[in-house]
Image (tube, rainbow, N blue to C red; front, side, top):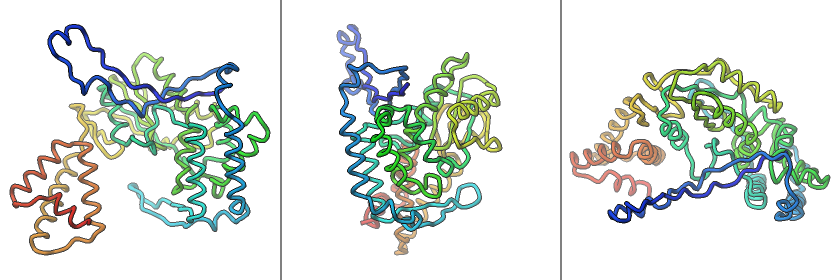
Amino acid sequence: MPYITIQQAPIYYQMSFDDILEGNVDLSRMVVPNVTNTRTHYKEFLKDSFLEKFNFDAMIEALHQFNNQHANLFDVERSTLYDKFFIPKKSKGLREINAPLPELMDALRQLKTIFEVNMFALYHTSAFAYVKGRCTIDSIKRHQQNESKWFAKLDFSNFFGSTTEEFVMSMFSMIFPFSEIVKRKEGFDALKRALSLCFLDGGLPQGTPISPTITNIMMIPIDHQICNELRKMDEYYVYTRYADDILISSKVNFDCDKLQDYIIGVLHKFNAPFILKKEKTRYGSSAGRNWNLGVMLNKDNAITIGHQKKKTFKAMCCNYICDKKKKVQWDLHDVQVFSGLISYYRMVEKDYIDYVIQQYNKKFGVDLESLIKDDLS
C-alpha cells in the first residue's frame, strides 16, 4: 500500500487557431514553469512490470556503504557530535538548535543525497518548507490564486523534537521506494541503522541538513490524506504546510473547529507522535490582520509586507544613505541584513521596493544597491 510521489510535468499553454491568425503568440507563455509541483498517488499494490524498473539492490547497497563508511559515528555518544546553542523565537522564549560537528554534518549530507538521488525521494505538493525553488511566498500564493477570504492557521507542537525513529520507519514503510526496501530484512536493517544517525535524544534535532528532508518524506501520507479529503468537501479549500505551520483557506466562511478535529483524527490514524497546539489555532478573514508566514494577504488579495515594515524599510534606506554620506560605516552584519531584506521584500512587493529605492536614489543622488554591493565586497 505505498504512496508514490512523482514530479509534475510542466503545464503547456493552449494556443488557439485565432491566436495564430491574430498574431497573439507570446512565447513566454508557451510553457508555464511548474518544476516544484509534485503529484502523489496511493496504490493498494504495485505490478511486477512497474517494480522491475527499479534497482532496489543498488539502493540497499548504497545504505550499506553509507553505514560502513561512517561506522565510527554510530559508536560515539551522539550528543558529543553536536554543538548546541539557542536562538530567540519570534514569540517569546528560545529555540534550541543542535548543529552537527563537521564529520557528522558531512555524513548527514551524504545520506540526504542518497535519499534524494538514489531513492528519488520527494515531498507532497502541499509542502513548501526546505524545498529547493520554494519559499514562504510560494505557499501564500497558493491561497492567493484561490482568492481565499477565510483562513485557519494551525501549528504542530514540538514537530521535530517529538518525531521518533519508530514513527519515521513506520511512515517510510508506506512510501515508495522505501516501502520496497523495508520488505527485505537487509534493507530494513540498513535503513533503520542509517536513520538512527539522524536522531538526538529521541527526536529529530533542528539544525541538521537531513531533518527537514526526513519530515517532508514522512509527512507525504498525512499531507495527501488531508489535502484529498478537503477537496471532497463542499467548500473548495486550499491546504499548505510549511514545516510545522498549517494554513487552510477558502473563499467562504467555514468551521475551523471541525477542520481542526479532522486533522487531529488524521494524526491519530497514522499514530503521529506530535499534536496540534490548539491554543495557537487562529481563524479569521482577509479583512483583518491576515498575517501568515511573515506576510499579509490583504482584503484586495495582494501579498504585502505591511505598513509598519514599509515604514521601517524606508527609514533603513534613509539612515544607510545618510551614514554613507557622513562616512559612517555600518557593521558588516547589519549591511548583510539590509541586503537580505531588500531581496526578500522584492519577492513580496517588487514594484513598491523598486519605487522606494528609486526615489531615495533620486533624492540623495546615489545608487543605493551599488553602495551596498561595495560594502559587501
